[in-house]
Image (cartoon, rainbow, N blue to C red; front, side):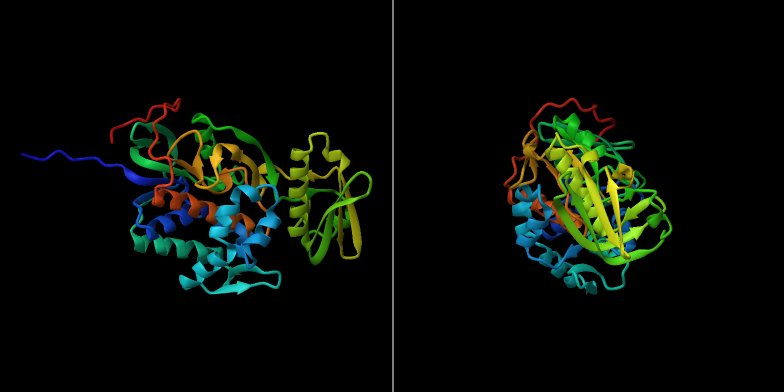
Amino acid sequence: MRRALKHTPVRLAIVGGGAAGMFAAAVAAERKIQCVVIERKARLGSKVLMTANGRCNFAKDISAEQFLADIGPAAQFVAQSVRECPPRKIIAGFKSLGVPLKRMADARMFPADGKAATIVHAFGDLLRESGVPLLTNCPVTGIQPQKTGFIVATKNFTLWAENVLLATGGVSYPKLGSVGDGQRFAAELGHSLVPYRPGLIGLETSDARVTRRTGQRFEDSCARVVAPDGTALYEYVGEIDCETFGLSGAAIYNCQRFIEHCLRERPALEACDITVEASFDRECVRLKGPRPRPLKEAIVTIGGVALDEVNPATMESRKVPGLFFAGEILDIDGPTGGYNLTLAFATARRAVESVASGSCSGVARLASHVRPAQGDL
């Protein structure tokens, strides 16, 4: 007589195969946690491959405390994650995988060959050698809590998991897979979403001093954010690039991010009250009421799953036990220079360590309004 198959849930389903998802899977493999990675695109790390113009500035060689001081609003929420997985620990981790690294004068870290693919391949090799199942070209269509875990639905099959980690990224660069499906699942499961704003993006201008320099980059330039009374609110020294649409580069990106956070935290302040002064090539171009490029082009998304609904000690939902978040899906972001990849790595590690230690709330026991999963386990 044939014995009936006994179905058991996977310990952890990781939805999203970007920076946070790959790092989470690597930690899970190290901790001997049975997991599976489910990625909507045909390969892992699509957005990682384009970071820093394809060179992948994955971290900055600074202390955890300096890192937290630099990122601003989200520092308190991510403090434990970053202290446990600081930038220098991440750097050491890539060295241990045999990845040659290059440190820039400003402490930014890159693979020595200047190719982001080197970082993605290091993850791929590690996960393959660890036997982690990678389900690519496989968009998740719904997540439904059960009495003993979750049903994770795709178009062609369903999967039973004790815990789910949403690591689907933000909503910029949708062609690379960041389409906001993780935020949609979170909202369907009762989470609030902080409205999206573009972070780390260029500013538009038709100033002739910019347009006639299109294609030129100016290192060690300066951009500052100026209040209506002329007070400098923020200043950053770095590269400024002249583009067909206006200005970009690290100095511009970080000023634009500062402005977005100012507008969010000070509702009475309007963009038209702010001026950006960009000093490069002996010019000082003033942008009154600076206009950022569209959100879909932003390096990082400001906004996402509300932090007060997530436990910072575990990265677990306060609303749905067994549901975790990591990376840009959360309302966390940092300046340019490796901060956002470090945030993805650190929060992913904290989530997986919570599952490993049993410090999470366990499998979900809440009802849901998510569409019922289709198909049989």
